[in-house]
Amino acid sequence: MSAFAAELIETARAIAAPGKGILAADESTGTIGKRFDAINVENTEPNRRKYRQLLFTSEGLQEHISGVIFYEETLYQSTDDGTQFVDVLKAKGIIPGIKVDKGIKPLAGTNGECVTQGMDDLDVRCAKYYAQGARFAKWRAVLHIKDTIGATPSDCAIIENANTLARYASICQQNGLVPIVEPEVLMDGDFSIEVAAACTEKVLAACYKALSDHHVLLEGTLLKPNMVRSGSDAAVQASAEEIGLATVRVLQHTVPCAVPGITFLSGGMSEENASLSLNAINQAPGPRPWSLTFSYGRALQQSCLQAWKGSDDNVAAAQAVLLARARANGLANLGQYTGGAGGEGANTSTFVKGYVY
Image 1: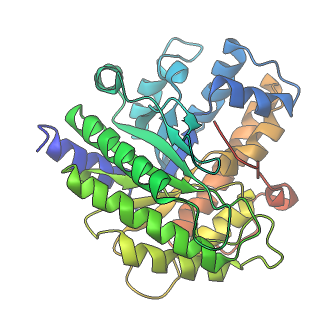
Image 2 (image 1 turned 90 degrees about the vertical axis):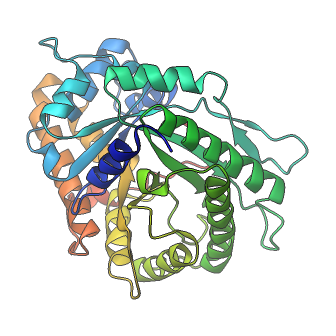
């Protein structure tokens, strides 16, 4: 067992605290550039630092945010007064985290499937990030549904990604970082929610078999899955209530109760739909022994970016938008969100086909 076992358990439980979730601010330089293009802001290091400063210095952020995922550049950046971002968050009681994967590569011989890279020097980087103040990490695997007969995701892609996630989790724990295990089944396609449920269940089952085989301490981990919903091009789109029921049922079939928290990705849903779906998940019938909460990037930041537009004059307004969305998701974690936060802009889709970051 890791020498960090007690600390890992404490960190994972703190991130999974009631009414709170994760702000995913780990967009790569290229991805944040696309977000900046939409608001006519130049993608430079000073502008990236200024925007992340806006996020992290928001007054009251800690009321509904328990952890923030950094991109490596951001982990070493500071505010205008020289205070490192990690220290800004720690002063608020928010736990800093770090994206550690290096993106996806094609898995040869498959129907366009992929595997995530970044394993070679992971132990060295994890130790370095821990020394800088990070206490959890994230690694994203991507699985595809390209048919409705069960051929994809293939066994090859599922097993390869499950074992890679498990190896990553083990390395993180040996170096003091709580691993967020993220096996994202992309909701790209015209498949039904029933097909999404079957594929997601198969992927999660393989992941927890691999985590067991690699002797990962589940109490010191978090899961970041997709919600189970209709494909983006499906003629019939599942309701929030149907998403909640299907998602919880899959989790009940696959995720051990030792896992303290499940922090969903938004998967391109609008800010409002991501909040409403999370709320429905927390109102679904049956046992829910984990904290079912959020780890949102686009679904926390899209309206905030639109409010900011790169202007110092708009910082306070943008922070207010961010806090309103964080509060909506904190209430959704408790099953108490009734809708309406953010106005019409919160209904704008954040979907990007084949999303990479």
